[in-house]
Image 1 (spheres, helix red, strand yellow):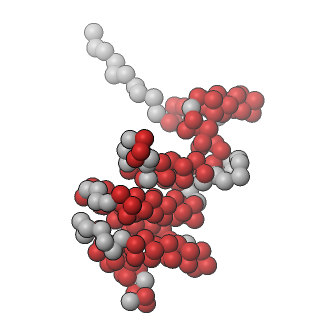
Image 2 (spheres, helix red, strand yellow):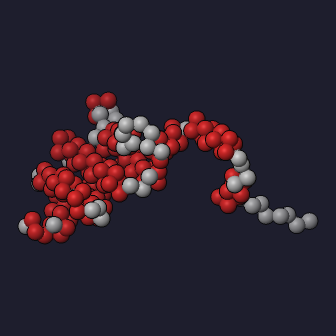
Image 3 (cartoon, one colour):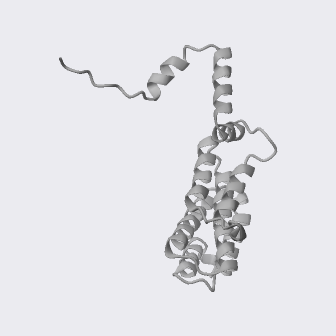
Length: 183
């Protein structure tokens, strides 16, 4: 007897069921998802602009991940900080907010290494990669929204002058490539 191949559920299977729900059932479903996890609550708060600062939970995660409390033996968590940016982007897709979080990621990591010294190649690679992405994101913003980010990116680049691993050199290259008029 031949066995049938099991079908793994996909979005279209779920969507087919969702479209049959009435408004009350949809609200109940969203409420259940809201209560299910912190990430769902964060997503819904951000998507629907609930609260005073939709960036606050993402900023907190980035700060704690990229500038951890070393006196409490907290580790640097690059992937957790990147994930915060990704979650915000999925929730809203706001380029200005994304640029803010990306800049904060690099600011926190840069400040950490300036204060505590040499880290490792992977850490600097992650910072260089995010710095370059931040420049790209910032340059995609309307001109009137760029100057604060440009100033912050310059401050990061300038403050990194005594850091090795090619980190400062790459920041310098990326900054002056994006802003050649500054040379």
